[in-house]
Image 1 (cartoon, rainbow, N blue to C red):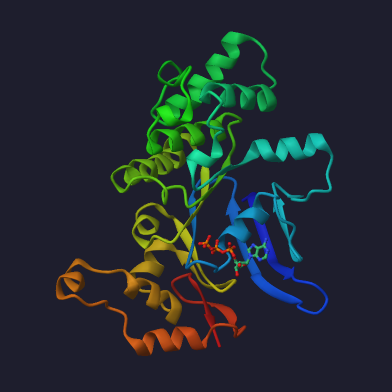
Image 2: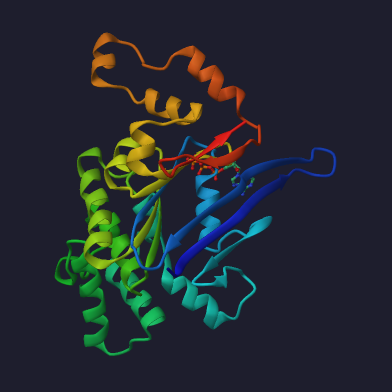
Length: 303
Ligand SMILES: Nc1ncnc2c1ncn2[C@@H]1O[C@H](COP(=O)(O)OP(=O)(O)OP(=O)(O)O)[C@@H](O)[C@H]1O
C-alpha cells in the first residue's frame, strides 16, 4: 500500500505577546494520521471550536509549519523550504476549500476569470478551447457548467452555487486530495446536503480523497470513512466513522454525541447532556494519556 498523506507526531505551538506577557497555546499535540493513495476516502476531523482542527488542516496544506513532527505527501516532506516548482506541484495536488465562498472570491472579479487563472497556472494551458475545456470539466463535476457561470460575478450566484464554483476551482488541477475546512457551515441549511453529497460523489465517482473538517456529527456520520475526534489539540479517538459515532468510547466523544439535540429532547425542552459527563470530559483536558488500539480497530486515548 502506498501512502498519499502521512502526518507523524505533529505538534503546533503558537507563542504570543512580548517578553513579559509571554503566552503560548498548544494548538495541536502529537497528531498522527495517514491516508492511502489507493483507496480514496473522506477523512473527517471533528471537534469543538478551538480544538485545533484548522491548525492541523493548515499544516497539511503547508500554510503553517509544525513545531515538531513531520508531514509528508507522496513521501516528500511538506515544507515552505522547497523550490517554486516543487511548491506549485504540491499545491496542485493538495487543494483547499474554505468555509466562506464569498471570501474565497473577490467580489469585483468574474468567477470564470478565477477558474481560468487556476487552469493557466497549474495546467499551463494557454489556448482558449483548452482553458474552456478544463473549466467546464471541473464545473461539470460539481453540477455546474461554464455556460452557466461565464461572465458572472460572485454575488450573482447563491452561497451553495458559489461553494460549488470554489470546489470546481480546487478540482481544476485534478488533485487527489482536497482539504475542506467547514465547507458547509456558511451555506444555507437547505443547500448543505447538496454540498455534502458533492464531496461524496468526488470520492466515489472521481477518486478524490477529502479531509473534511466539521463540528457537525450528522454530516460526519453520513459521509466519512474514518474520523478523528479532537479535544484541545489532542486526538482523543480515531477510527471507522460508524464504529466510533455509533458507540463513542472517550468521555469527550460521548459528550459530543450526547450534546446533539435530539428532536425528542427538544420537545421536552431539555438537552441530553448530563453534568457528570461534562465534568468528566473537562477533567481530561490537558492530560496527555496515550492512544491505545481496541479490538474493533479504533484508537482511544486512555489515562
Ligand atoms: N495564528 C495563531 N496565533 C495564536 N493562536 C492561534 C493561532 N491560530 C490558532 N490559534 C489557537 O490555537 C487553538 C486551536 O485553534 P484552531 O483554529 O486550530 O481550532 P479549530 O478547532 O479550528 O476552531 P474553530 O472550529 O473555531 O475554527 C486555539 O486556542 C486558537 O486560539
